[in-house]
Length: 465
Image 1 (cartoon, helix red, strand yellow):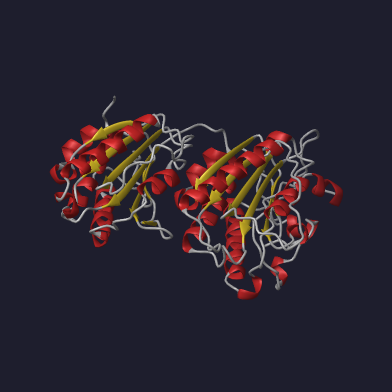
Image 2 (cartoon, helix red, strand yellow):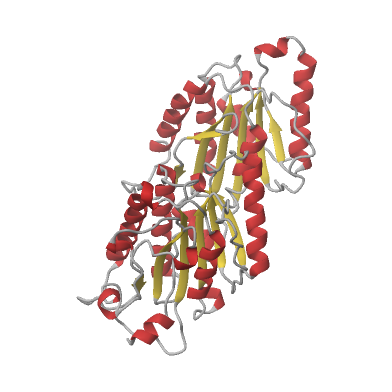
């Protein structure tokens, strides 16, 4: 394939990072025969132009060094995009991982572009599926190592410039084959005197993977989510075909595939938000685990559980690693089986989360609920379990646009010792929360936390109002 054709067929994955690259493995290189023949050597059929997938990673000082959850998200992106390249995206597919820096339009790439062409006959020059995954894993390793270097962490964050560059790199690809993934706190911080680039997108399908950063002053979770909504609107108005936002801590390969693939909703998303009152025995969390493991057998697969303790600002949330349940008829060493690993792991999670008892008095339940509300946007079933004293009344003025339609919320309230002074106020608080949730179209079921059984929880999880 000629160099001109390779450039025309380029399908890009830009990795949003803010760093000054100092190693040869991060330098910008045009795809050329020697490099790309390791991945694919067959010419593309006439009339096709491949697929473009662009990943951006934020390496600014407000976001880097990357955390373990960021590494997990990068690995999930690599696995999902490799699967899509083999199974769904028209080839050839080229992946380019690029940073967001103080001046992202002139930033060096994180790793060398990877060009993949599916072939029916394996050749010595071609690459099989393992080699594609390995090359994307190498990009992840390069990103993590570079972001950990203080000299590589940029003072400013030019998100607009990185997005503009990504759009330019995908221009030769049909509009329905352009994909853009961004991992960032989405706080754009430009050098003094610099204006953001005006964005012009061309039908890209965009996935925003977000978490709060270390921007000063530290933003509240509510401010962070307002910023995500602002970016979604800006990208849509710039010409994106679709924009989906997911918290980094909720990213799985399956969810990323659904967000960037056919768009079919599958599976069940379960979020447990705990803020245990000082009257609740910590072992009650084991009862919640037992109810979830029973109910999960009848839910659409895969069932993904995020179990988090709700803290005060600016920390707000501490989450256990995502737990996924996907039963199969044939046992696989990497697959959880009904009645075996899944209940055991849930019990381990519940036991580990007992150390957060009692919870913080000023916990931001509303903020945590807002944060996870989008986690199930690509799942067919979405459930929340809220265990708390709901220490503050729900503010009806907040989140007027939050839509929990189709979301089942199980309220598990219990009073704290302080509520003995005014028991009526406790009851009014809980009622205000139930009304707030229903006003946002949630399907609400309420059970007293201190009287909970696994069977009553199963009934509430499956409750239809």
